[in-house]
Image 1: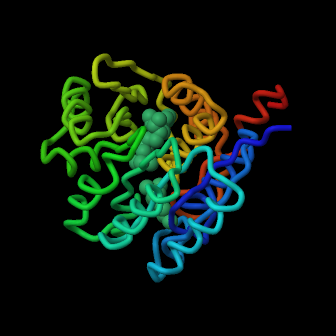
Image 2: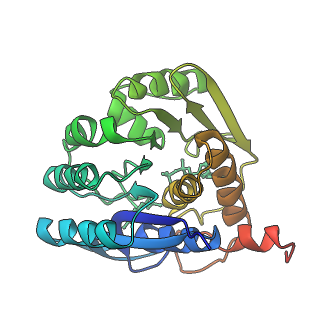
Length: 268
Ligand SMILES: Nc1ncnc2c1ncn2[C@@H]1O[C@H](COP(=O)(O)OP(=O)(O)O)[C@@H](O)[C@H]1O
Ligand SMILES: Cc1ncc(COP(=O)(O)O)c(N)n1
């Protein structure tokens, strides 16, 4: 039996809805063996981020090297990277270990407003990580920071995708979760645009949607799917996870990571 292997390099969310917890749950539901390299520990729940503890660069490096040199990695995603020196070290270890299929979720600010990437560290992302990336998956505020432009229309999402593609990433997915109307995401491969659309579900439980979506893309790339097919599956996965809400916590709750799996088996 061949097992596909995916690694997440990201922060821990004690609440289990975002970060490495969301990633590992998603990998598992999509039938991929999941591994993690923690960059930071957050004390977090559905009401917000209550504490952030970054890990030493050596600890991050050792985790990546340990899994890459023994178990092997078919695809990797990055999430919360906190600060420029962590970005640089992560990029260096991905390169040194020849890890293929890098998905960059350029996490900057949590939905509750807490900064998960220090201000001005986006230049390090652009310089060190984006040239290595197969796919980058910014939401609208992140795309605005990366391009320095306001984005309020689908046409501006496409312009942003073009701009971000020029940083050296092979594919760009600009997510439209923060726009009104249908949940529309744009995929740009450097030449053509593809659109992925799902009905907007009215809910406050969208904690970790970006983490889950990018982890689903990573899972499918680990299995050998094309980027277009990986995004198709990820869109279906996140739409199910948002629709079948769990209603946990008093604030912005997590999505339902096993909803997609249940739908596949027609259990719901
Ligand atoms: N209310 C919603 N209903 C349906 N899909 C949504 C909703 N909110 C976000 N999405 C989808 O979830 C994915 C994550 O998007 P987004 O919320 O923009 O990312 P982030 O969590 O990084 O802010 C995208 O595919 C987006 O279109
Ligand atoms: C450890 C960690 N990583 C990422 C996010 C972003 O998720 P969201 O934008 O849904 O708050 C988060 N809140 N915590």
